[in-house]
Length: 182
Ligand SMILES: Nc1ncnc2c1ncn2[C@@H]1O[C@H](COP(=O)(O)OP(=O)(O)O)[C@@H](O)[C@H]1O
Ligand SMILES: O=C(O)C1=C[C@@H](OP(=O)(O)O)[C@@H](O)[C@H](O)C1
Ligand SMILES: [Mg+2]
Image (cartoon, rainbow, N blue to C red; front, side, top):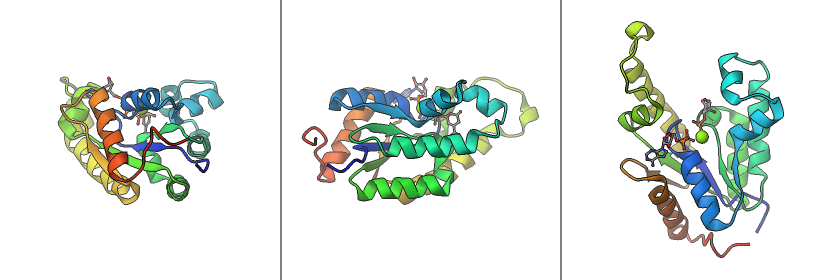
């Protein structure tokens, strides 16, 4: 088709974008591009290190990584959770949609995200109310994802392979035939 990714996955950290994205790409015989990996490659350092150090290059690196990922024809692309807060990246997602990309939000609730990311273990209360903050963060990001996504897929109680099936099902319902596209 037109130089756009086939599928763009959005969702909070722990929604399962990377896990389901790899499976989807394998099923479609497509490349999987995780924007976070492009950042790490470009910076020559693991992303977590850059985040913890509040590296001043991070915003620019993440923006350009999102643009490069969104320019990969036929790929399955995962963006980092908070990249939806960057206006240029949202423009890039909307442009990719006009070129044929199908955008899906993977949805996971607080309990699921907490379990998957290890935040459900006992921890210091000195941080305030991490569970309430996580819930608020998930709700705020969901508003933004929903604003650009063509579809959303629940991930609770479903393993990544089933999540990948559901994403493909949504593509087909929307009239897209990812297995048949070149
Ligand atoms: N559908 C799922 N069910 C249960 N655990 C999952 C699921 N998807 C991902 N996970 C687990 O949750 C964690 C975060 O998954 P990941 O794919 O890295 O999410 P994201 O890229 O959205 O942050 C990993 O430990 C992964 O094994
Ligand atoms: O966008 C974010 O806030 C981040 C998302 C994480 O990736 P996932 O969304 O794949 O978990 C990881 O890049 C980093 O810890 C920061
Ligand atoms: Mg990821």
